[in-house]
Amino acid sequence: MSFKDFLSFEKFLSGNILKFLYWLGLVIIVMFVLASMSGSISTMNYNGALGLLQLVVALAVGALGVLLWRVICEMYLVFLSMNDRLKEIRDKLPG
Image (tube, rainbow, N blue to C red; front, side, top):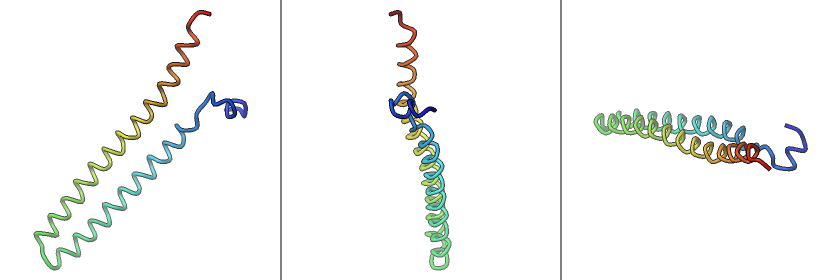
């Protein structure tokens, strides 16, 4: 990417930033799941069934969180790629 592209907004930086944010979001989700699992293990000392339920819920919410985060990031990428496709169509039009 040249400096001219940067100034004229011909190319977007969002794609690269989105990849970083995707991985950052995954790390945050995994940390949340690990913290919840740790809490569920400490709950098992007092109430085994409740701790086990908390563990299962933490894993399920973590799996759904990863899935939802992926869908959100993919939707944002679709919106960004629409601009690129529209540019290609514009360039192929006569005149």
